[in-house]
Structure formats: structure tokens, C-alpha cells
Length: 82
Image 1: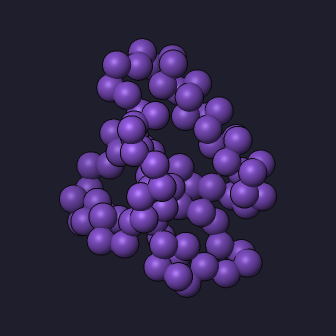
Image 2: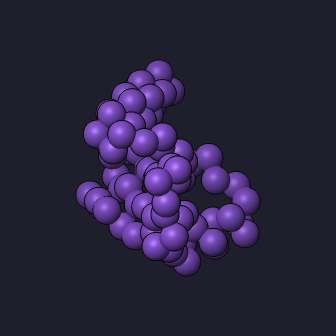
Image 3: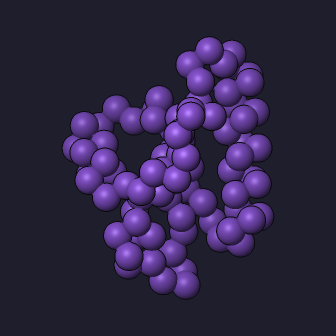
């Protein structure tokens, strides 16, 4: 994993007991498709167990909407960067 960042209501400070956690993740570009999918779903499962909440895991690679990306970048909180 290259990076992971929190965005959405938790990053904005408006999280409540029903909120999910929105996380932006970037994996190494060198991963094969099957390894990428395996890492994505393994990470998603582990995070939901640890956080005991639903997690919306968004891949940087999948973001195509520049308006959404700008909104995420405005409020995101970097949690890890390699």
C-alpha cells in the first residue's frame, strides 16, 4: 500500500454513530490485477472488523471525477504514506 487517507464525515468532524468511514487508498501500480483485488478486499474486511463499522474504501485509481477528487482532497486526513 502506498497511502491511505480518511475523508468524508469523519474527516470533517461530522461523524455520528450511523456513519461509515470513507477511506481513500492507493496501492502500488506494480500489482497484478488479481493481487490488487485481493489486497483491496482483504484490507476492506480487516478495516471493517477493526473499526466495527462499514468502510467505504475508494481506490485512487478508480477516481475519475475531478470535482469529487477536489472535494476529497480538500478535507482528507492522511493516515499513512510510504
